Length: 267
Image (cartoon, rainbow, N blue to C red):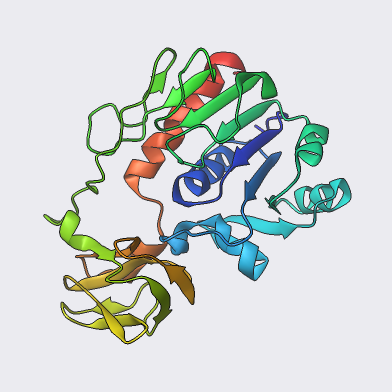
């Protein structure tokens, strides 16, 4: 059943994209997303932020289209059954949209300007917000605790440890970290098979080396200005390319938490 609520999703990275996919799949067709001019997503196979560059991105049957910053453009995209992506919209446009629900999915781990007064229902993913005061609900996003996806009505989500979810026995060793500051150029792309020691790209004359064998699961869009120690992507230790373009079970748990929070107010 199609829902009539207008939902504004701040951010279009991996978690935000999973939320948009889940809400759309549950009948919420009046969805809008926002992102910055040059998004820094890593798991780009499942990030609607790619539409900021390519004008359109489809993930598991749901399509996002880049919109110009006008109500007419937004409505035209909605009429096609797609989700508009607004790149760096001003506050005036967002106010004119008058969303019933805001989902802050920026995952900045701090408040970047979202407040409980901005919509009848405001939901935030992850740490940095006080549920019940700064926002109506917070959704737990720490993948390493049993409460992933839980709805928090009072207080804060768990701080992230920086330790990624274990996949086939691999955790930190999956990460691609920049060996230096400079401009990254890539010779491989998401979904490519890699062996431990393969060169994925270069920062200047310094190689970015695959730490394990598997498939390239995430990689920032290149060329990209990067700093030493920055997370640039990761390698999935499995062998299936399809996993690079599928929403993870962890992201779906977070999406379920958002739907639960909305159901407490609207459904």
